[in-house]
Length: 300
Image (cartoon, rainbow, N blue to C red; front, side):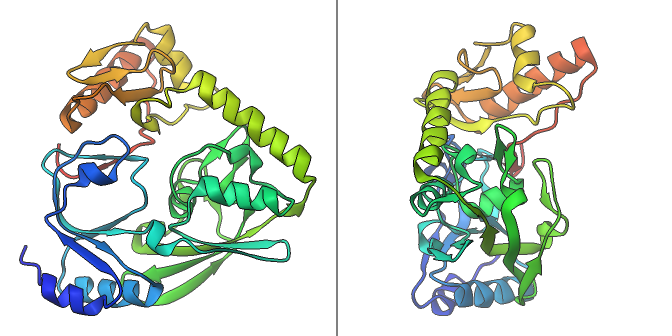
């Protein structure tokens, strides 16, 4: 693919463009090869211009946030990576509605809601990543799901059209229908009044549980597998004695069996091979086909 980086730079007068960027710098696993260019638009208008150009040129592209749910191939990605993180991170209140741009930190959004005595997000405390990722995956924890609070989503289509989707219907760990051809740029959340002290206590309790039960001191991408109906992927993996199992520098966490961690020198292939080893063992013993919660990018 021939990419006119100079033209992209002209399209993004306030944005930033990084040709041949290592994606290991942009994922929580700390692995992954290079992309053709990593682009940080400064606003939605720049996203529109960029997407229109890439679509016209039939240039492949993907959108990422903070990379907390991604496994990027060691071969990298032959295309443009549009990163929406701190460069698109506005959060503001309008009564009981909160608006957040897709690059805003989910953890900071939860803190913002609590500070403004708004209930509905406190059980999501400690989930890493961005608001856009939370919409994309319908992030959830302890019986609460981000999509339950979404009133509308602002998006840019792959043709460069700005749209608003009202009352999108979310499904478990899968976001809303049609998201694959849309770039999420912002979301309106409908929350309810709450007691700040109570909300803070709930969030603190959940953060403490995460510290005790998750390997937060090691590089990972959170839970690797979706829970099968009526069961827990972590419980099944633990029951099969796979905690601590290694492939190269990748390990099934001894703390939480649904986490795979980079012990320091893992490659993306190590992690991918360990994922497949676990899936195969689980299917062999239980006939359950675990689905990935982690999103893979590139060729493995």
